[in-house]
Structure formats: C-alpha cells, structure tokens
Length: 155
Ligand code: HEM
Image (cartoon, rainbow, N blue to C red; front, side):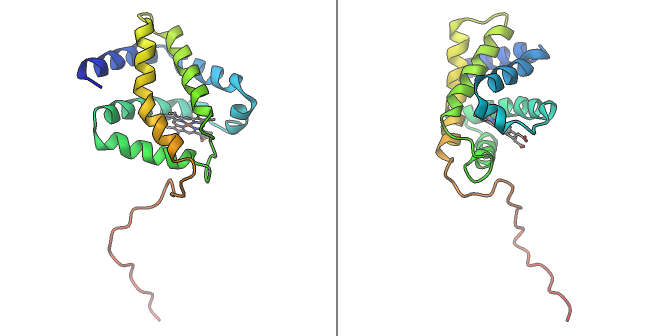
C-alpha cells in the first residue's frame, strides 16, 4: 500500500469510528448474516469486542505499512481464530468482509466505490493470514519464555 492509500484508509476509518454505531452496525449485520456466526458470538461481551476490533484496525495499518507489530498481531489473532481455538472456518471471512464494507458504506459520509475497494485491499492480507492459519496448532496466548531457568524446589 502507498502512503496516500494508507492516509485515505485512515481518514475513512476515522470518519466511520466517529459514529458510535459503526461497529454496532457491523456486528448486527454479521450476526444476522448466519446462524453459525450467531452461535460463535453467543457468549461475547460486544462492548469489549468492538473495542478490540477497533484496535485491530490500527494494527491493519501497521501491517500494511510493513511494520512487524502488525504482523505479530495478525499471527496472534489468527491462532485465536484457528480450528483448535475459536474454530472460525475460512469461508466466514468473506461474510465478515462483506458486512464490514456494508457498515462502512453506511457510516462514511464520503464513501465512494473506491473507499470500498480500499477497505477490501487493506483487509486482504490479514484475512489471508487468518485463513491460512486455520489448521495451525499454535497456542494463541503462549507465555513468553525468559530463557532464565526456574528456581529448583528445595528438598
Ligand atoms: C480479518 C477478520 C477478523 C478480525 C480482524 C478479527 C478480530 C478479532 C479480534 C481483535 C478479536 C479479539 C481477540 C482477543 O481477545 O484478543 C476477535 C475475537 C473473536 N472473533 Fe474475530 N476477527 C476477524 C474475523 C472473524 C470471523 C470471520 C469470525 C466468525 C464468526 C470471528 C469470530 C470471533 C470470535 C467468536 C471471537 C471471540 C469473541 C469472544 O471473546 O467471545 N472473527 N476477533
């Protein structure tokens, strides 16, 4: 992505998130789109979920700008969504993206077809990582090892 495209995405994201209803609308569309999606979110705290997704969009920008923090974030959430954890099948990502661009179209007053193409391109890499990791075995919250041996228990 070029700096100009990143700036356009950032501006659209800012316009969308200045509407408190943006991510509420996105999740309403997404859970209405399929019983399987509804089931996956049956025990979700949506206030927290919206906050985490909003933070994720900033990671999308870092990832698109080639910054390692963005890639690390996507590897972590890919493991969380994998078959071994939340078990999110790859086909649900296309639905996710369609619902997201629908909510963007409703929330960004400066929306044009180019805005939609930009959002789709911005999300494409992260989605590709998440789909590819569906069968991965990785632990999403594996604690960091310090390399220092734990003290031995006294006899
Ligand atoms: C690129 C697309 C997606 C992004 C960026 C994304 C982002 C996130 C983030 C940031 C979290 C919170 C992670 C944490 O706890 O630290 C999350 C949780 C979750 N996501 Fe996704 N997600 C995506 C696609 C999907 C899809 C397609 C589904 C399908 C149903 C889904 C279902 C879930 C569920 C069930 C949780 C856990 C909710 C809970 O804690 O109850 N996600 N997602």
